[in-house]
Every structure is written in C-alpha cells, then in structure tokens.
Length: 245
Image (cartoon, rainbow, N blue to C red; front, side, top):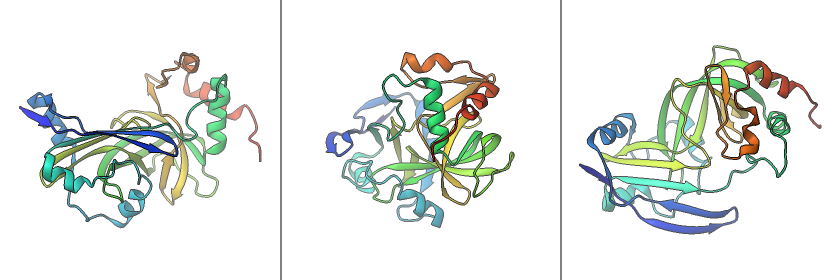
C-alpha cells in the first residue's frame, strides 16, 4: 500500500485565503496509485521546453512557499491542493446565466468546443506547484479569434493549473479547485484568451458536453438553468447581444 504525504498551511493573499494541503497519510489502494503514477508526466527539475518555461510563469504563486523538489526529499510522494476564488470567473449576484455566458464571450478572443487529446505536466516557474499543457483538438467554433483565426480540426495548446508529475521517482499530484483538470476525450465549451500564437488560456469555469448537451459544473442552482442546452442554443446565447466597445 502507498501513502501520500501531507502538510497543511494557510496563506493570506490579496485575493483571499490560499489553502495548500499536502494530504498526510492518505491511504490509496494499489490500483488507484498505479493509475496516478502511469498518468503522471516524468520530469527532471529545471528541464523544460521553451514553451513550458513561458507557460510555467502563468501559474506562479499557487504554492505554499516550499519548493516541490525539497518536499519530495523529505515527504516522498506529495499531494497539493490550492483553493482560491476565480478571477473573473464567477457570475455576479443575480446575474442571469445567459448574461454571464455573453459576458464571458465578449471577454474571450475565441469560443470553441474542444477535446483534450494529450497532456503534459510540469512545475510552475517558482517550483511550488504544477501546471498542465493540454493539446486541444478544435471542433465547433462559436466565436473565432479575429487576429489569429482558428480552423475546425486544428489543435491548440491550453495551459491549466494543476496536474501530476513524477519527480525523482516520487509522485506529485496538484489540484487547483479554481481550475479543474480536464479529461482526455471529453468535449468542453471553452472561452479562450490568446496567450501566444496557437496557445490560449481559459476564462471562467469549464463546461462539458454529455450526449451533445451542455453540462454545467457550477454548484449554484441559479446557473443550472442552462443544463441540457444544445450547441445551437449556446450559439444563439452568444450571438444574441452586442459587446460593449
């Protein structure tokens, strides 16, 4: 049986309370642990591609002040949990779901339905957390990038906070509650902000499609009124209304 070592710490930041949890003595069955290790990206500290170096800077400040490379030396396998509010990703009080979707669309460079096909994780630039680069196959395009138009069937890179790596043969799993991990092969509605040519970050929460119907991931009951909406209905919501200049 394997265990994942843990430490708990609270950090007060400008955006609120950041909780970093390293789950201590959490027992995992052998099959679950083996699956986590199989899916984790083997890495060597300090070795990144140029694109990974650029993406790693997006998610600095998520950690608890300790370098992961030092944590694995003393704790072995490590689990990290970051909990903090979304920036620009939460509907305003009493905001209608349709208005919220329109506001996300207006702030996005592109809105697409995409499917993650591969993923690779790495340490953030400060070495205290993990991020993942997802390769996304672009399907339907509800709003195209005016400066760098996307083509259905093409692929883009979507960096997101969180992920799993193998560092010095130790498993490191990082979960960011404001940026849930994406499942390979699942369709998602993505509101994208251009980071560099071919690379985008996602805005707000993430929606998945189940049997062609929108599946909201909000806990708020008021936001669930769009559950079951078709792609055509979502397109109508996005198109129905002008963005302020």
